[in-house]
Image 1 (cartoon, rainbow, N blue to C red):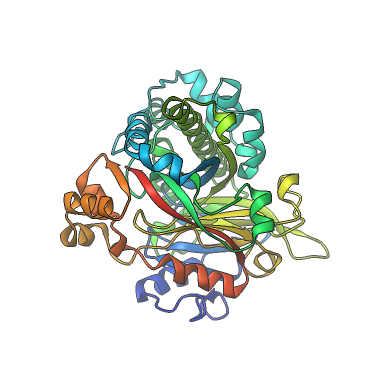
Image 2: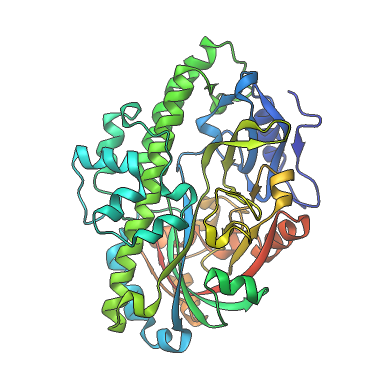
Length: 459
């Protein structure tokens, strides 16, 4: 294993790292074409193949590979943040009605479905066009596209590289949360660290209400990952790639197999961007119904939408810039000020970075930095990170009791499953403040505002 010099998992970033995480990082560093170093973010924990929280780049010109296990099963699991002009004093008296209505439209839970049913032509269009297609069909505002990573559409998507079974799984799930750690959360701003930058982003004052959506590509993306992981075992043998862990099955990015997965992954990413966009349109409708005002009158503006589990070609180094394939698994892109990929409104600030906590704790709005571009392949953490397995959490927590405890804390929650609620209890996660402190002190992102939940729809 080519470990020395490859892995950055310092005490500064990760005070306590499981030995299994370090082993997974070492296995990842041993993949062909890896460019030093391999990073682990402070929310890292054991994953499939590569740990959650891993960031690394491969060089296509040096037989660099692409690995579905280093992207993840929930391709483009991501977060978007919507702000409003409403304050807690207006929303709190109606929070139960609001959350109940949001639960009714969210498609929460295992196998959760949307009220949309796409035909084959439509789902292929979503896979190809992402947010553009759903906005063109009435789900949102045209300006929403500006505030999505990649404008909500990865250009290398080709539906021909996706299996018919993946398409079938995705036809009834566009506009739904699903299960696991996915949620739709009503939040209030509790602290603003940089008022001027916050105002540009749409955060004006304490107790302002915002909505955070966390979900991904549902069964569509999961099936794409499954399909290619099954294929890539033999593909790795074909290209004589020695794997330290077969869960990191891969293919050279420039091979026909590597390009096919890269294309199919982009289709799943586009589906996930579109999924969160449809949910946004539904959320705006619910707010209109509950508060008897138009969504424009209430604000409900999209700040940004970020991807987590994804691989992208990005330019690094200088003289000349070099295209590298950056894998982010449970990590967030964090471009610094001046990056041309950012919407003009944010270009002088840096990319908005959304860090989701557990349903019992806080979330953060942050900004990417030049240091992240120089140090971590423009990457930072994505959440608080698990400290225990879901099975262990269910042994320690009873969902019904947790629901009442949350209500006593002022957090009204609706869940599709009490077992699923127990899995996501706060004790199963690291302290989000510690995680944010680590990345901010390292200089790879800048805290702007802190938010706390007052209502939650849990998958």
